[in-house]
Image (cartoon, rainbow, N blue to C red):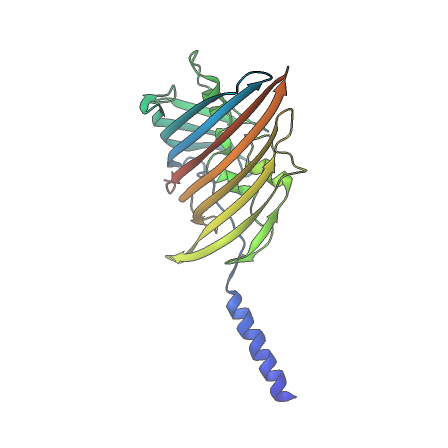
Length: 272
């Protein structure tokens, strides 16, 4: 019995070692008070809209745009460990449609933001500011690694572990999409961890299947991939969001179908 007990103990020890180190994942989504980071982003969007009226042939319009930006973001105030106000200086902001890049109203601008409960206010007063740019600014507090904060596991995980995501978490992770918390789901995974100068740098993958709420019926799939220190020590990160969304609606006998897909990338520097 003694030999069997020792053998069992050895097996359990090896099993524990094979599990590797556990990590309570923490990310640093914005700089500390008074510090800044530089962010470079690209946002490719391909969309089509089809309208079908009874007795008439369907009409489809397609569009493709590529938005590229670089800005320096500085944290101005933090309240109760949460970002309260910040500033962005846009070194560049361009939008390319039909292979012709043009500067957006944000190019070269300095914008200050105040974070509120569900949005943030900005001080850019520009009569020519398009609605999509205004919306982009009011959602600026959700950019970058902020998307991961509500999607992380509530307990320590090992390399290779997965965790489920509720519909409420999906709503938090994709605030610009009217996801239905009752019908949307997802999962997260700590794909791998590498030690760099003693700091655990993790690759995190989030898969989301969502259904929209409201008048327009819609379904979408998104994959978020992030590479960043997972001990909360650094803002440095690479982020990619790929996804597609289909929306369908009918009004006064006309059916409308919108299909949108694209890829967003962000590279964030260490704070200084």
